[in-house]
Amino acid sequence: MEPLSPDEIARYQRHILLPEIGGAGQQKLKAARVLVIGAGGLGAPILQYLAAAGIGTLGIVDDDRVSLSNLQRQVIHDSGTIGELKTESAALAIARLNPHVRLIRFEERFSRETARRQLSGFDLLIDGSDNFDTRYAAADAAEEARIPLVTGAVGRFDGSLTVLKPYETADDGAPNPGYRDLFPEAPPAGLIPSCAEAGIIGALTGVIGTMMAMEAIKLITGAGEPLIGRLLLYDALLARFETVRYKRRRARQAG
Image (cartoon, rainbow, N blue to C red; front, side, top):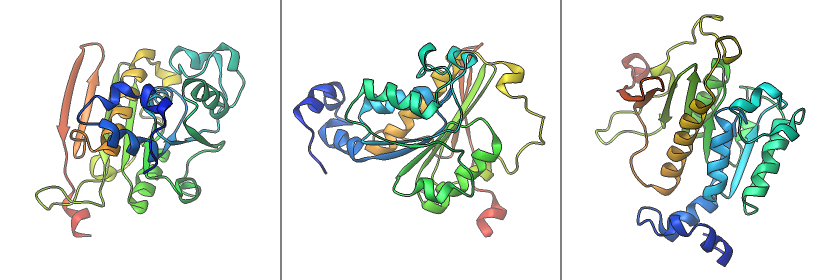
């Protein structure tokens, strides 16, 4: 792996002091190539904390532009970037935060048709999208590419996240679950209102997005136990976390 420069050693000193990370873990972060879907509510803290952590290459997929109503939660953007492409606004903020991070921008949506091309060369996918079509496309693409997926969702005052590695087996030899083992099919259109329809508390996206970045750091460095086969639920109004375990469905396992 490429050695850390003196500037990087000073920048990441607090990481390097951690036995679970150390210099070797920081080098793994530098070598990592992470694709993030969405530069919005979840994507903003994901991108900021991964850039600050020293991820060597960050990809950003988003076809939207910054609007005034985004700024209540999408903290990587600011009033001066209203009207700009979110990928451009986010890239400028990341460059100011950490010049050691290489950025690859995709000014388009992530879909089944674009997934293979966009994922090429990346070793971890993080889905911060806000719709089920993209979530299923991300899950299928990551499984096909045999790379980990960190996926999360938010609405009003509630959030959730999990980690998927369905191409591997658990310690007991059972196949790890995939996204469809957790959500077999998307809900009917219109059943779950969007943030624009139902509202969302801005700080919630920071909580869940930061935790998604933490899961990515754990996957890359090997520190701790990722949320594989576990769905973490957060109720902001009650300040309560719950963890729900889930497994591979029998029908899928047989197939």
